[in-house]
Image (cartoon, rainbow over all chains, first blue to last red; front, side, top):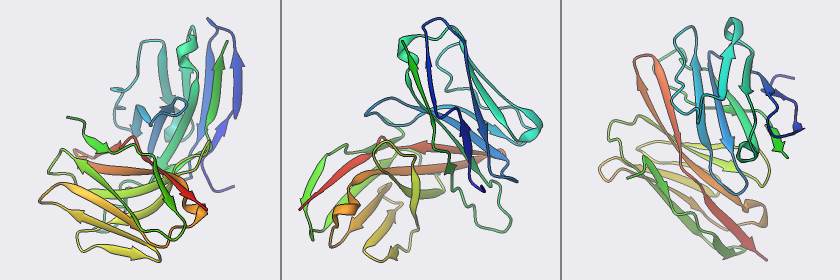
Length: 119
Length: 112
């Protein structure tokens, strides 16, 4: 499809294991964001990739979290030595920023998320 | 002070009612503003952009007040299907980056 694709949609893992979450953004979108949302809570910013520029990693909660974006397209979020508090829905979004013309669009297109449960 | 603040609610309103949400932001230089809607256990989706001149889409009206640094969303003739969490989004552009800040959301429950 033409939307943002995330996998896996559900992941159950044991405490201490590593997990990888994948995001395939909309083709041509140069901006890619990762957010985390715990049950009943708001969106927590994790990391932002903008083209070939250095990513904004200011939201990563600890050094167990890392992300990369290969070839300016697919992104992988890796959580090492998972803890129970890492249980959440991890949402990826892409954006066509910068847009052509004078108007800054700013719209983010979200994937359906990866639900992580750490036992 | 949080960068973007919203009343978490919940707002419980009867069908047909008019309801309004406000969202305040702290950076006076912020440039773009949006309302997103998030249904339970779903991803957020764009509801509408917010302009200084105000914009309307059917039963929904969004307004920006730059002087007081808030945006608003008005929903007229509420429907059961309007039940969701409404997220305020503020965007700053600087140095080729697009900084996106989400509010924590306002929960709306429309009651039959």
